[in-house]
Image (cartoon, rainbow, N blue to C red; front, side, top):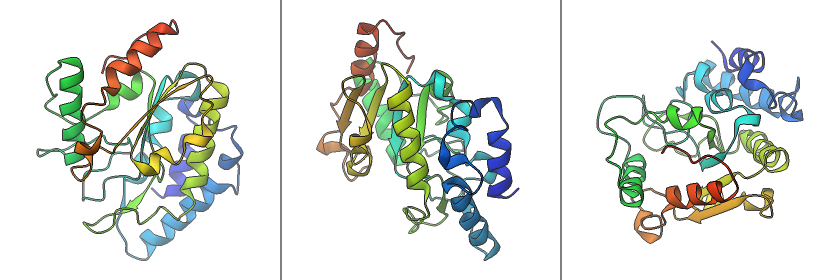
Length: 232
């Protein structure tokens, strides 16, 4: 399957409700343009992650009218086999990606919950947590992180973030690290909560991610707005 085909399948799916109305998903729009570049990279012999059918997984699993929280990552894991289309999520054998290990450590400290044995965060997405990367694809390889940040995905995900801010009420935005926090101007903070901290990467987690208690803070705020807590 090509990225272009994956885009068409996504737009025809129930999960695309709300998203498909955004101009970036129109024929010839920014999503189609980014997919065209991804397909050209694959044709040139580059390995691109995630698999085409998972490129739009975050949006398909969490329709616009279901979004209650947003966790914003930079781009998919570039390590072969790690990316599955949901920011920070991982499906595969141990060991877990180090950023996800740190997320689980903070979750344990924050909520007193034992770390899960696996890294699949689909259960969060199904509760309305939009696990969105600012770039939806990446070249696989140890040195390829950020390789697709200039492909045009940023315009797509900026439109998604702005739509959530505009169309939804009482959403918690968890912005981990400087690239995620650069999206803060897209969020109407009179309606939504922003929890910003360092990134959970081993390079920065001890500079403000650990101890930030994002999960309990998110749930406390949601409940104050009369919303259900998220089962993290």
